[in-house]
Length: 303
Image 1 (spheres, rainbow, N blue to C red):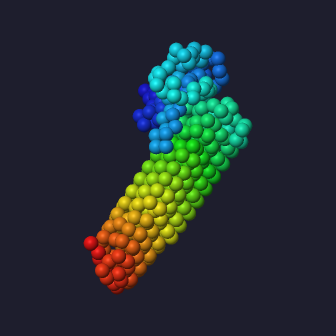
Image 2 (cartoon, rainbow, N blue to C red):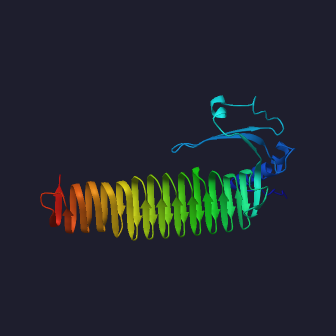
Image 3 (tube, rainbow, N blue to C red):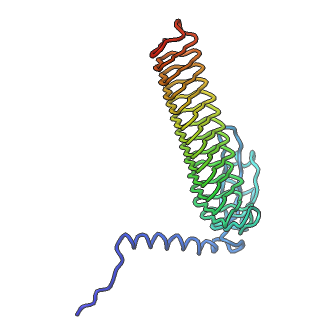
């Protein structure tokens, strides 16, 4: 009687191989730089601050071999930046902000687990916390927490939090929170929130909130809210909510009350109001202040 050896299905073997490779990276990374714990590298980090384009030069060098006068990738960037030496770890554990392994002024390049919260200089790839994930610099990859996520900015990230996602700089990616999403500066991507989405600068993408969407700069995309959509700059795209407002509209507003100081497009609602508008209003009451006929029921137009 032949005995058949059990073999895992091909999909299971592939999954096991990926998990094994991931574990090997975590276990073998310390050998990359025996001078420092947690598999560190010493690198020169030079940053150039610009209102619309923050660039960071990162060059990894084996520990103990860094020469800031000799080892430079770009002399122009090097001479105009602040060069410091930082530790870098592949893995980190955070207890509370200020208490972590390694210390909070280090960078984490692969995985950080916060039990319940932690803070570091920068985090890349995966950042998971029971309560909070805090990053004093840029964060790239996935931030997942039970309560809140905070960082200085991100060139590419998914932020998912039970309560709030906070970005003190520019953000490119997705924010999803049970209560509030906040990006202090330029935002490109999607925001989903149970209560409110706030963008302090220009916004390009989609805002979806249970109550309020607010864009302090120009808005391009779609705002969808249960109560209020407001674009303090120009709104180019679609606004749908009970109340829609834009300083300048180039698109469509659909709601109970629609307001635009100027612009062009279509307003559809129970009551529509515009100061100077080239387009069509459809509703019970329609007002275009600068039109030859300022008020008309049902349909009003000005071109």
